[in-house]
Image 1 (cartoon, one colour):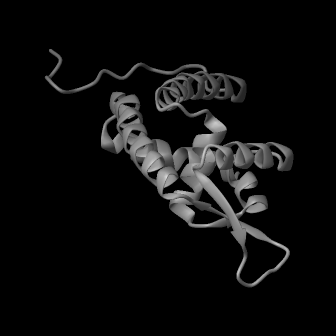
Image 2: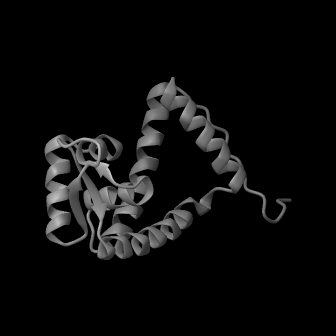
Length: 150
């Protein structure tokens, strides 16, 4: 008899590298689809959300420091920052120590938007991860970090 609250565990027989990649890819696509759908409801695309979220959590940064953090090329990050600046969500300001660099800052409107959007995104991602217990998520995080650094 199965006890309430206990999840059944399926025996995995195929553990080769290609199968690991396939399962990881499918899981990523499922979670990414939920993330993109949630972000789209906020009136943002992934690039714009990434820029705003990065500056929210890391503080003002040079454009060339934001791109690598969110996986955008130099051309794509410049276009994204231009688009956000046109919408009044960010401003470029002179770097206090480097006259050649400009830092991307959130405007008050941008800060309000990304704080609200990020709070909603956190809830959506919590719901997406709810299929796993807290312990299972901890194990998964450890295993994915190990895989990513190997």
